[in-house]
Length: 459
Image 1 (tube, rainbow, N blue to C red):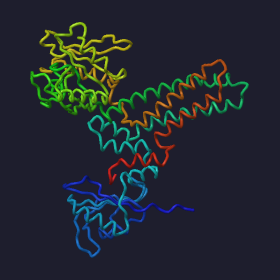
Image 2: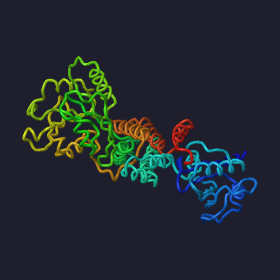
Image 3: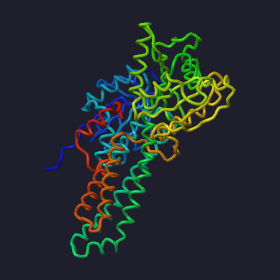
Image 4: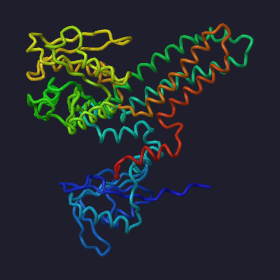
């Protein structure tokens, strides 16, 4: 039985509020009658045509431009009409209501883009990049989302899938000759092909991790004892007087946040109350909030006084470091380096099994702040080239990591004296399925609902 056509949908496609221009968008099959009902006639395809928008009695609602995109050459793959009128909310609602009178129903969030995906106009990664482009917080993030929308990320994923398909085809053929399997695999250079796929996957995963930072940003929490310059450093990073700075210890009680951009990555920098033993009930609440902020941090910057920490950190600062979560990246800033007669610089010191980065700077003058910005990015692995980043989501990273794990297991099987070909083939299949989920080849309906439900209405 042939599936019935999807209902015609309509939405206001421009943001709420007043503007010079507002757009009402319609998508569906057989919408020509709807266009005639609103604009009087169907314009030539893809030609902006001036029209008067009218109600059921012929009274004018607005005057503007109507555009018609016949299927399948449209964003959704269905016929689309757009009514471009004046951007007043009341006017747009009148045109929207007229479209509903003529048989359209109100679109759900992301329904236009969901139809584009279901009709093969976009794959799932491209569809998600539409929302990422709209929500991009920085110009660098917007460019990365545009690359994903253009299909660069999807092409990389498909190239990996194609490589796995080729490898699986050869491996499956090997299963037909179990007595010659090792020689068959060696003849096909399977080990080298697998190594090439793993290397390419590692590059894609690195770019996706950087892109995830562009999309999600980082939360950087400034901690330290009172009067070490946390508020001054926040102001230096924000390039404005975001926090009150006084010589009085305990001035900062509640966390103060500012979003700054460093190398295209949005950083939420949080200034917190100084950490010390105190009997002041209000200050103690502020200190509790400091540790609560640390729990949500992606990175902690510990500030110390450069004059008091020339070689080893004072006991109080060591106690703060010891209380930080073990896996939480951290950078130690030796502030007031100018007062200590020291030039801005960076250094690395052993911290158990890890290496802790140190930066000497002056938050008051700003000298050395760019060094800190670079160290913050390096501490979270975001110091690579941004021009190759893909604006990845957590599900993309999870799929890439899953594929990486399956390929590592496949390589381990291949390295044994008598490779278990069936297990090797299964790991390749699992890796391919994980990668195919990124572009939507394997996608459950509940996943699609979760993805498109976060879109804005009208897109």
